[in-house]
Image 1 (spheres, each protein chain N blue to C red):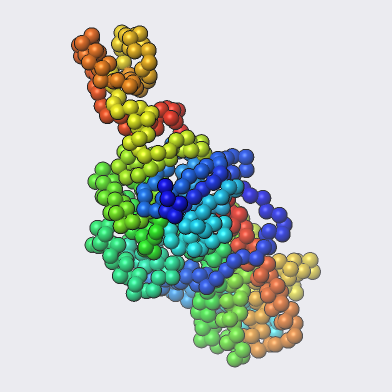
Image 2 (tube, rainbow over the protein chains, first blue to last red):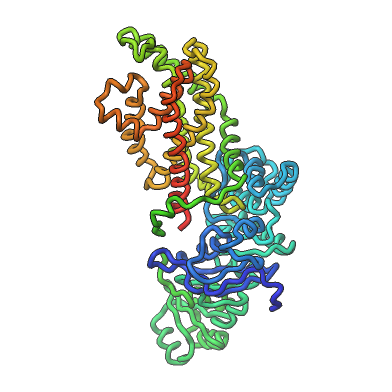
Length: 307
Length: 266
C-alpha cells in the first residue's frame, strides 16, 4: 500500500464514555478511492468511529488523521471535505426537498447559483427531480434516504460517510442506493460505509473491518475473509440426531453449528461431505451453498442477540 | 457525561460569521409562514390593552402618575420581548435539537456547535425584536407613546432578547425532556410576568420581594427602561437597569453555549 494514498489513518483510536469504552484502541487505514466498510453488530462502535472521523465526537485517546489533518485541530477543514449521510433522518422538515439541499449548501459557503445547479444535478442523480417542491413529510423512507445521500454530496466531498444507508428499505430502494454508491466510487469518491447487512458489505466494499465491542476483530477484502474463515461453500442439513452423530463421527474436523433447525457444516471439503451424506441418508434436506460474509460475521461475533 | 469544572462553564466559545447561517435558516422558516408569525403578536396585546387598560383601568388608581393603560402599554412591549425570545429558545430550539435533529445535521458541516447555539440565541433575540416592535406599533397607534426616544426600544428589544434567549438556552441544555419546560415557564417566567412592575408599580410590594425582582427578573429592568424611553422619563438611574442587562448577557450567553456543549458533545 502506497503511503501517499492513505486518506484516513487511525492509531490506537479510543472513545470512552465514563467507564464505558465504545471504541477500544483501534488502528486502521483507508486508502484514497476505496469503499471501506465497518461491519459489526449493534453497539460495536461503528457509528462512534465514523463520528470521530467527521469531527463531531472528540476522541478520548489515540490519533486520527484525515487527509493529513488532525481531527482535534482542523475540524472545519476536515468537515468541509466530508459528506455525511447519517443513520437517522435529520432532514429539515420545515423545508421542501430542493430547499433542504440549498439551505445545507450555505453551511459549506457554496455560492447561491452554484448551489442551485448542484441541487438540481443531485436531484436528478438520485431520481427525485419530480419531488423537488414537495415537503419532507410527504416522502417515503426510501426517498428520504436518497435525499440524505444527495445532501451529503452537496459539497462535492472527497470522503462520503454512509451510516447504515439502507436500513429499513425495500429491495428496490436498496438496490438504487447501491447503484448510486457504485457510481460515486467510480467517480473516485472515497466511501466509508457502516452496515450490518453482510450482503451490502460484500456488494460494495473493497475492504472491511469487522468490529465487536469496540475492537476491530478482523479486516480484509470481503471475499478473502470468507475464504479464510469459512471456505468456499457451506453445507446445510436438516437438524437430525442421526445425521449429527454421523457427522461428528465421520468428520471430526468439520465445525458444526446448529442454526434454528438446520445444521451448518463448515469444512475444508464440504462437497465431499455433501456427496457422502446424500449417499448415506438419501435426502435429508441437504444443500450446498456459497459461503458468505454473514457466515464469517456470525462465526466471529457469535449468535448472541445485541440490543 | 464529561464533568465540567467551574471555569469551563465560562470558557470562551469559538465563533465565526457562520452564526448567521444558522440564524438565516430560522429566518427562512419564519418567512415561509409569516402570516402565522405576524398576526398573533399584533392581536394579543390588543386584548391586554382593551381588557386591562380600558376595563380594569377604570378601577385602578394612577400608577407612577400615569393612567393605567399608559402605565401597562410599555410593559406589554417588554412582555412580548420576554415571551418571544424565551419560548423560541426553549420549546422551539428543543424541537430543533431533539426531535428534528437539526443541530446534528448542521454540525456535520463546517459550522460548529458553538455557532449553532449562538445562531439560535441571536434568532431568539430577533424574534424579540420583531414581535415587540409590532406591539410597539400598536401602542403607538393608541397614542400611548409620548417621546421620540421610543425609537431606541427596538434595539433594546434585541439586547433584552439576547438575555432571555441565553437564559432559555441554559434551561434547554439541562432539561431531560420537553415537558420539563413547565418548571421554568410556570415558576420563573409567570412570576416575572406579574411581579416586574408590569401591571402595578413594584413599590407596592414588600421590600424583600422588590429586591428579589431587581436581582432576578430581567423583565423588571427591561420594563423600567422601556417605560422611560416611551414616555421620555429619562434619569441616570436607567443606566443601572441597562448595566444590569449588559452584565448578564455575556454570562448567560457563554454559559448557554458551554452547557449545550456538555449536553451534545460527549
